[in-house]
Image (cartoon, rainbow, N blue to C red; front, top):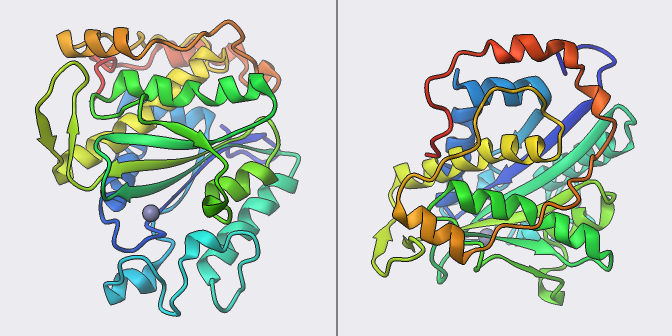
Length: 292
Ligand SMILES: [Zn+2]
């Protein structure tokens, strides 16, 4: 429905592999894509409400050459978002043009931008976000990573941080966080190159390709939790995620839930007509509540 002409599109924009050596980024991105195109009931609901734009590989020439960080021409593309050149940074230039075009289109609301990376020294999955003067915006920005932490045992909210270091200027997250308005949230999603520790335990669990893809699936499903929390998705008969085991309970207690006192609407809720509720309720699902 959200693809029909004239409909307002709520867009989630995801990019990956701007740093060619960060192969886990591609597995996470693959997990997101596989989930979104699947027949999983949550994926079906997400497709009904949101438009996902995914550029899975921002640095294809660097990947082809086996570079660790740079493009063919030796640029760290994640420092050139401010003024990408069409010949020196063509992928950035193209993606940025598309994002600016969507930003200027009144029928399009760019709600999330997530750039996926891999981290060579930290463990777990975690996020970087931006710092805003507006305290409420700052708080709201923390909601998505907190929800993701509840869904993914390898994702750490305590490692998630918000910054405005000079060294990160020119990154996709920082640049787009400045360009887009207060209804958009921009994150860098980092995942460890090697392992994660489930909160409440001490043993490091080595990441596998499957575990990276699982994180991707959990990122995707977290959008439903987010939009349901914000009353954007109504009458969807999918229960909130249940705790799977003791570790999750410990994790939940340790990494305190965000305060949802102001679940602000990001636009008129009427974009989602209630008349469709019946259809959504009829979605057949066995147990979609279990996080991956
Ligand atoms: Zn990176």
